[in-house]
Amino acid sequence: MRRQFAFKVASRIIVCLALLAVVLVAAGCGGGGSSYNISVYTRSDSCGAAETWALYLDSHIQDDLKGTAIYGDPGIAKAVQDDARGIGFNNIGYAYDMKTGLQTKGLRVVPIDIDDNGRIDEWEDFYGTKQELASAIADGLYPSPPARDLHFVTKNAFTGLAAEFVRWVLTDGQQYVGEAGYVALSDAKIQAGLDKLGDEGAGDNLEGSIAISGAWALYPMTVKWAEEFRKLHPGVRFDISSGGAGLGMTQALAKHVDIGMISREIYPSEIEAGAFWVSVTKDAVVPVIDSKNPVLEDLLKSGMTKQQFVDIWINGTLTDWREVTG
Image (cartoon, rainbow, N blue to C red):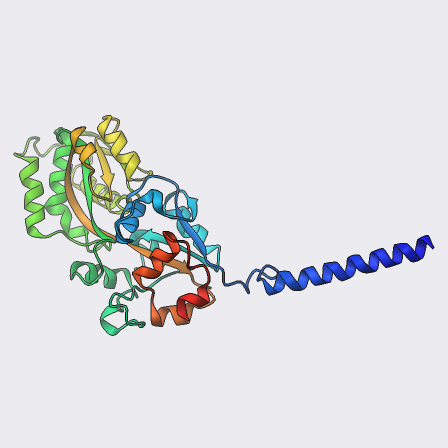
C-alpha cells in the first residue's frame, strides 16, 4: 500500500511539474529567449542623460522614469547588451564605438519615427555611424531634446589654468570636436562663451594641475581635449573622472574640482548658488536596444515614436515588444 501510495504521489508531482514547465514556456520563462516582455532600464545616478531623456518625454524629470535603475552610461549599455528584451538610453559616446564610429557591439540605436508615420523615411535614417548622427544633430534633424548642449561649469568664474584650458577648448580645441564624434557649437555660442571668460590671463608656459569631474557624456571629449592640450603644454596635469552631471555640479560648486562637466540645463537654484558655465560642444541621448531583440528587423524599419517611449518609461503601459511593431 505504501509503495502504491508513494508511486501515485510521485506520479502526480511529475505531472504537476510537467504542466508547470508548459506554463513557463508559454509565458516565455522557460528558455529565456521566447519572451517579448520589455525590460526597461534607467539611470540610478543623477545625470544629464536621464534628465534630457525625461525632458524629451513630454517635459518630465529623471525621477519620473520607470525601469531598473543602473549606474552610469557603461552600466546601461552592459545591462541592455545582456538582455535581449532590454531597452535603455545612452549618450552617443557610449552607443557608438569611439574608434570605428559604428554602433557599439551588442547594441542597436532605435530610430525615432519623428513624423509618426509608422516607418523610418530616408530623411530619418541617420544612425549608421556616429558621424551620420552628429551631422543630423548639427542640421537639426534629430530632435532637441534629446539633443543638447554640453557645458563646463565652476563656482563664480573660471580662473588661472582652468580658464586658459576652457578658452583653448572654445578656440583651437574645437577642431577636435568632429573627430571625436561630437557636434560643434555655432560661432555665436562660442563667442558668447569667450565673452563670459573675459580677457586672457596666463602666458604660454603653463604648469600645474586641473581637476575635472562630472557627466559621462562629456568625459570622452574632455579626455581628448586634455590629451591635445598637454601636447602644447606638457607641464599641465589633468585629473578627469566621470560620475554623472549631478556629481560634477556638486563638486564644482563645492570647489572640489576646477571644472564640472554638465550634460543638461543649468538649474536656477544652481545659478543662485554661484554656478558659472560655458557651453563647449553638443551631442545627444539615444534609445538603445539589444542587437538580439526579438523584433529588431521590424524596429529598424518602423522605428519608435515619442509616445511609445512615453508609454514605456512614464506610463508603464507598453510592456510587450510585439505591441511596438504591431
